[in-house]
Length: 473
Length: 122
Image (cartoon, rainbow over the protein chains, first blue to last red):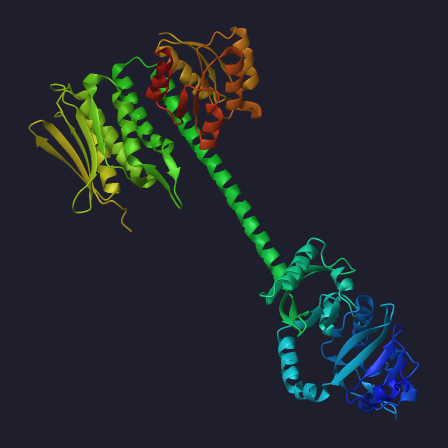
């Protein structure tokens, strides 16, 4: 025991820094003179009163959550026994003559434990930062204007104690009336979409655990009490206090309108896709119908031809069927490229020649056609020409087993040359048939801007059509 | 070799043409069917004694040549020759599991159909 008990009350009173001492029920038990001077209060006025009651909220600033944050900080200190350093808060001081004086503080709350280890007191050391805050006002005002212009809301979050400070627009976005949201984030988390909440929590957790991470972005949905859904995008940065505590600040933007537009666009794209699929289906159906109808034409003619007896009529019928087949067979080989219907001309002519000549060895036809695609409007005249020329050649007796050669190739000058090299036409063929055949060949050649000519060679006749590769404009 | 052929084709004119063509070539046409039910009845009637079925893909009353080919193959081991204007990749793929003789597109030529059929007797 000391002979002269130390006068701790006098020591506290004389401390050069502003200190306020509270008990665990947040009742004020003492203060330094520096504190009283700073807050313009007397000891009698505040001792024995709850801090929140002794320093009431400025009624002109309703909706601020500053008293709430103070209470959160104090309760956190009591619960954990750890000191807590608050960010800047506004806490206006009641004036003796009525009214409030605007003040900004950075309070540090330090717990004091009794002999049993229980927290008995909390010492508050409020640093008055009003001057520097007011100096920063212009910058703040600029920031507010910028936030407003960008439709951004700002927030601050201390994950450790769930302390959640934010501009009014955040409360609006979450559907809270002024003052309804409270000082902690829990009610706000409760309004996040349950599918999005785990993602947000995961980001917060990882930010707290990794000191090297400083920037975070969140995208989540808010479900309002009216069941309306809002989409928000948030970006934040992490600040770490001198004691390593994590504080996050950031902005929040309502992107619901963007999302609605995106959804509409997505729907429109989907609808377009469906229409396209329908078009494809319809086109396939039409294509199928066309082939079927053309087949009916050929089959009908063939049914008749098989029942004829007069050789000359049979011959005429066969040639007519052959011409129709030359035209319709193009459709069998049609396939769709990106923007037009084309035919693999090599494949097509090979089949056409096979159909005409059959596979008798003495009627050998060699097809030498370069692989190329051709639109129907050029493939059909070519088919008719080949049909006529080959039919004529096939009528002649084979000479020494020499094959008939059907060729289609590019010439150095860029033109295409279709040629049928076969035996010379004899006078035995029906003149009327040959006449019509030649007329068809000439007409079809003209249709593809080509020229037809016949060359007599030692081996027979070479019938040639020269034509440009592409149709003239 | 003379083959016993059934024609599964709902377009009667085409069926008639095919029948003519096959008979001219010396084959026997055991009958014609327009849909799956008729095809199965026909096969039952001739006790499955069919060497080949000429098969369209789109048959009457919403029935389908691939299903019909499957039934003929499973019950009587009758192979099909698909003759259709509707032979896209998907159809060929589906039809292939029933080991068809082949595929001939429409409009077909006599040569194509007869050559495909003669491959069976070879």
